[in-house]
Length: 427
Image (cartoon, rainbow, N blue to C red; front, top):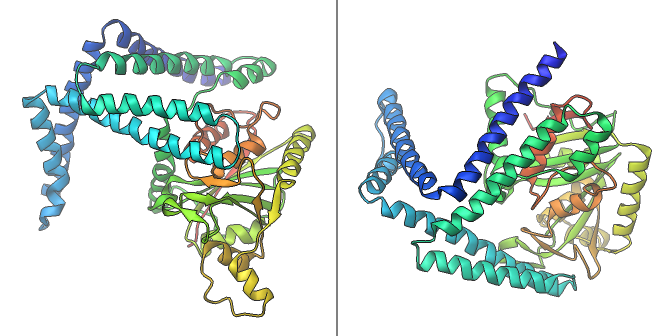
């Protein structure tokens, strides 16, 4: 029975993987058919979406404002438009992908500035890649036609790679442990960055719905007497920039949180600025986040070997050797016997509620925080996502969503490195 429970999911996963592999191959041998199929599915999907929204309105029998009808009218309107003028669907595909690449190019140029500012290696490559992205994006946006073969090339490569790696990941689950670990170390794949970025908000709403239906229990008490060797915390909020998630690492009773926490040194709407490392007592920090900041926190406990503990401690010591103490405004006011009540920035609130220590970095990695590169996830990666540890096995650009996806999959496995998942939220 146990073998059967392993074989059935294995067969299902391999079938899905082969489907993606087939899609990738079709993009190479007959890409026109794939795009036509996507066009037809888009028209059908938008029509069904509009009908579904119409049915909800009829069923609701409530007076609606004009704004409430906008999603339904948009679905029907776009479906009719691309059905009557199909060429515009393909122009739209060029346009959307072009803008997506353009956004990545802009992010790349900002990242190039960060690399130069912090004296990091690889700045030239970042600039060249961003320039190529910019040229490609402008080509798609300014001349949105007859370039489906280029898009098909990239899509085909991705689906083939995804199918091959997914098949390998399915097969490795039935391999002996020693072989499995070697395969897992080399064969991993992440969801596309855009999709991975949306995972935290999707997971937040899933939690909210399950709690409403009494299918999930929340923990309102962050004080844990059975501390784990390592914990990964992912913070969620319903809206705003924090809806994309935030990652912190806890080792025993200390939590390590990295972000753009100096209000005097921020640019680009708080997405760029001096990087600040917060080191705090684990329990009070989590309590502050759920009670005062209204965050939902997913905590994953991970069991470490003695060797893994030593590796992480060495990396942590090397990181702290590059830091200098930094004091938030509330700490300065308290030390000067000034009332800190008016100090309401995040770092000041954490200091007042948790008595946390805070540090900035000397020139090098992490000196400058940038939300799309040197961010909270990169710090977590530095500490725990290394080949020597073999803990977090994701590839490509890693986001909080990538961590949620991997850790949830790992939790469902037998003999998993993730021993427990707890969801903290205020009542």
